[in-house]
Image (cartoon, rainbow, N blue to C red; front, side):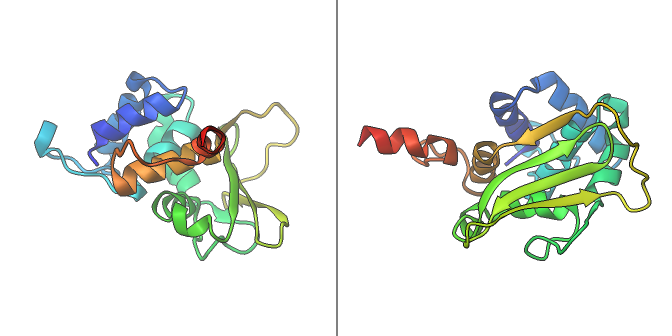
Length: 189
C-alpha cells in the first residue's frame, strides 16, 4: 500500500483531515522515517511499521513540527510490565497489531490503544482467554511524570485497528468484514 492510499483511508476512518495526515507524513519523510521516491504509481509502498510511525506521529504530537520528536519519544517507549507478545516498544506493539490482527484475536480481545498526547504514555487494553482484563502501560524511560493536570488522549478503537490491519495486509477488499461490522452483519442474516 502506498502512503497516499493509507492517508486517504486513515482520513476516512479518523478525525484527522487529509491535510493533517499529509503534514505528518511530510515531516516524517524529511527526517527519513518514511520512504521517499517517485510519485503516483512509482511511489514506494509503506510497511505496517511505517503505518505505526504515522499513527504515533498523529496521536502524540499537537503540532506538525513536533512530529519527529514525538515519534522518537513515543515509538521507543517500553512497557512498565512484561511486553505484549514479545513486542518491547510501543512502535513494535502497534506494528504487531497492524500485521497480526487475525492471529491475535484468536487469543486476545484487543479493547483499544490509548495514546496520551499530554505526556509520553500509552496503554494497550486487552482481555486474555481467561477473561481477565489487562492494561499494559508504556512510558518513556527517564521521563518524569508531570503530576496532576489535565490529560488529552487519542484512542485507537478495536474497529479502527482491525480496519487498518485489513487495509495494510489484504488491500482494499469490499467483501472483508472488519471488527466494527460483525454485529451488524450477523443481525442481517
